[in-house]
Amino acid sequence: MARSHNLDLRNLIGNTALCFAAASGTVAIARVMVEAHEGNLPMISNNQGLTPLLMAAILGHRDMVDYLLDCTTGLSDTELVSILLSIINTDLYG
Image 1 (tube, rainbow, N blue to C red):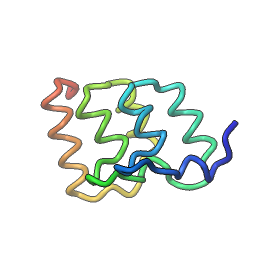
Image 2 (image 1 turned 45 degrees about the horizontal axis):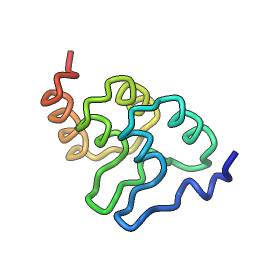
Image 3 (image 1 turned 30 degrees about the vertical axis):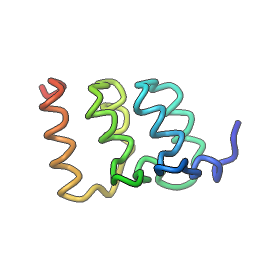
Image 4 (image 1 turned 135 degrees about the vertical axis):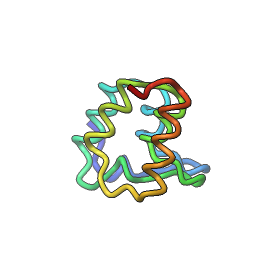
């Protein structure tokens, strides 16, 4: 398994491996990453300010949103509103 600190690495636009897992909707991979990381990996946003949770919401990945909602802490009011609007726009709300 990858070392925890490797999960913090970002590409040129700031995406971590968890961002890619969130974008793909693959919850099993995201779970392994979050459990292996010693910090709050779900709160690392990319250069556009998108957290993995918001990315999953924008792309309509219901299972990923459910998982990341449980393990993402410290979201600002602005981030929560963005997530709510995204899940409404992708028909995940309800």
